[in-house]
Image (cartoon, rainbow, N blue to C red; front, top):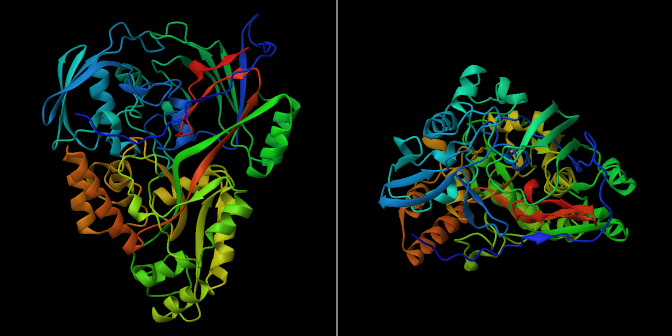
Length: 530
């Protein structure tokens, strides 16, 4: 079953001549030093659905289906797959694959990984939420039965990684790490995947060292033997490390430093549109808003308040001053590269302070109110600066925002447990399909990962109905119309406030060739140091 796709992929590369980077660890080894503003919160591939954590872990763990250099689906631990009837898919598994500890990969590991990914504490429920059961045919073949016809099933598997049943049982790691509750296990700090790199040393928030897996089943086209990943939270310090040659690859590049780095003859900046949408979420479920001076009421239950917040935000100034032009204001919760994007829904509500004040007054808040906003400061490009700008904008309509910007280690446990009233989040539809936004972000929270990241509990029964139909519809024209209808309802409800499509900003030495995926992924097996 196929859909038309308007995905505009930039499998961009940096390929330049230069001297060989001297390795460390053993003679002739090629070491790549990567710096990022944050760190993965865990090595458990089922614990957090967050882009950096996925990027790091998927150089160690692998899914059944992956993506190639052009971001198109390609076999990974499954060699092929096909729908044998509307609700059954046959997957043939790759033979001769071993986990890093030498244990063979079999169908039992797939079934175990399914049960683990849908368990309490997992952030990967949405990827397997359409599965009713998995039947083992033999050690290298399975049938996956879905709850209803679900033609985009293969697209949902690219971030569902396989874990070793035996290793998890031997190391008491059969359940996912639950960062909401502060629960850790062996999978937090150690890893046993099938991927091209192994974890050799893990010091959370200090550095993690990876070594090439000499028994990898696939082809490693690059020449990197060792990766040293170092989180450097301070933008100035991270840029200084790049300029001095202490690190070889850095992301993200702060937008204010892009031109300075471009001017350096030894460095190159790699940029492109990301599939991620940055947006604001609002608690629409509680009867009383958390962390607010409004007692006994929740202003966000009134669409006029949500609309007032939207119209108070000067998105063009955020683009020009905060993002230095490295963003595209957006009116939908998906980007133009995502299948199902509706060209007729591209107009944002106008920036209008007086209209916003009137909306607040009509809703019963002529003097505004006070509340707290949760924001990360080590995840997105200029994330805390965006939140500061939003807070300043809302002050113009007499809404006092107490901004709490903090690292992912503190931010995610709060918002994922819904201990928030107002927050900023970014989301990439990893399926490159609108269903990847409708199901986990816009649908009413429910079983099977539905609405798992709808942290403000926006709910509209018609949107839920359309989301189910979108999941099973095979006619592309009908499907696109359903998506547009659902997105229009969500827009009118102001279920979330979309801000902009983020741009990817990486920098690397000119002797480094790499592939930049539009979801901000960085596969190390394709990196070459010349």
